[in-house]
Length: 242
Length: 189
Image (cartoon, rainbow over the protein chains, first blue to last red):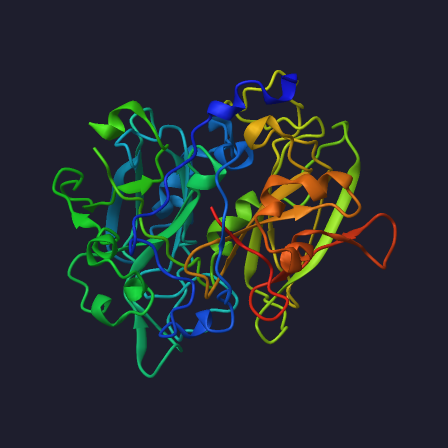
């Protein structure tokens, strides 16, 4: 056997999503998907070495101040200060340690610091709305930020996005890449949001809703919200069958 | 214990706020070995209009066919200054361009080598999940034996193979057609 291929035959791939737990590409209620979703079936690709590897980011790439979005201006941003924290686990329940978490969001008024956001709501000179962090050895992450506002969009008449925070994670492999959105408990807009509702499985949808968390709430400072993220797990791990 | 992977949601129109810090359209630092290449193209929608708010991410092996990743078991040297990751947002007319080195062949199933290829994730407003595809190289004899290419209907394989650009200079052209008759083949991955 040539050296190139030594050992790679035994590398397990990553699991595929359970039916209904991930959105389809075409979701007509979400108008932007109509001209952009592929029309042909995806080609099933068993994972090769290319998919079970992926970019690794070193701790040195992380700005330690980046996890506190309330400290990116010269003063305090307006709005309700919150702490968003949780764990990143794989489907086998193991912590995904030292993986990069990227985050972005609107300000408290529901406005993004972005040139194409024309929502008639004020920008906040003390709020940029982006952060990143590395999970610790137990897969934990923690951000300090402000609660984003809901905002209108033009998807349909009187369309409003529920308050949300965008998350982007890499995990250990190309196959584990995840971009998602975190929502807030009790938001009346969730029931009407085509993006939130594009996932058929109700439990899967509801896992995108963070929970209010006394444990991370800081007296006199900030309410805590807990949001755990699950990345694809390796197939054939020993305890998966237990 | 079996958990379910978190549901994907679109990056939306404002991802640059969170993504820009890792933008990288030049993957190989000076001194990195390998054949220097540049690839440009467009992300196009069902009406063949450029998608100005998409972003592609690149993952590839070094010129020797080794990934900068601990799970790559091959006994081959890593390449300092080469991570193999790129992130390139599209411009107003849907164009993107990046510079890298041509990856070497990496192992595939059954002990066979794969043809040189670059993995691509496509994110955009309107895409609830990323799209995954691959870029292969023109005139590479290994393409005809490649594992992943062989899974794609023969009539669609060309959508994964870059072309020599009419602009010359060794530039390669490769487009992402999200929807339509010449739709790019995307992988369930």
